[in-house]
Image (tube, rainbow, N blue to C red; front, side):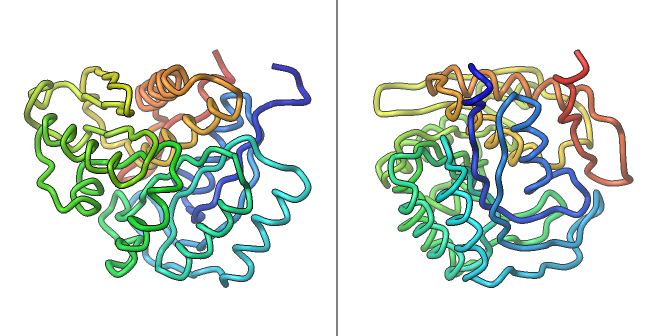
Length: 272
């Protein structure tokens, strides 16, 4: 990888004032893995490890203008979307993805913050299904998000697979079904099983469940790590494997900040 091609990732997502998730986690992750991060911010949130106490949406024309400014000058080798908020933002971001023709998009269907605050209006779930899923080179839902998008019960590892098949049928080219919420099935709750699914088959990523409250931003971090790998030219399975290992280690090295759901150590690769 030459310095002229570090893996440009345009992230379209919300800001997290606590730095553990959202745009802040995305930038840290992409940088730690050797990529170049650019952003189009969809909302400014007031939050820390204890939860979200305020959300200020960014005007639609500013979201679109941020994305265009980056794409028309710096360019992007991959896109990553996070918090979108409502139907109008979903429509705006879908148009931005179309502006970046041929650039793979990693879509993280963010719905609820770690502390429980809603980050996507219920009315916007249909827009995510019809506009974002068909544009996803990789979709990265957790179990509750997969259930909301498919209408299926997602409580076991087999349920994850069924939901993944449904999401592929809805147009996603690949799905990474995250098993952190699954407490029964192959892992029996003691292990976490994530499943990468494509039309060609599946690959499982499995490890011991880490007993920690420092899990804030794991979804944002994993999706951005995947996007970075794709931007750097890695094959999908290799990009996901590197991302999975990066997040696992970042959780193990969490700095212990905050009284609630604390952040990961995004910069651990820089201090090896």
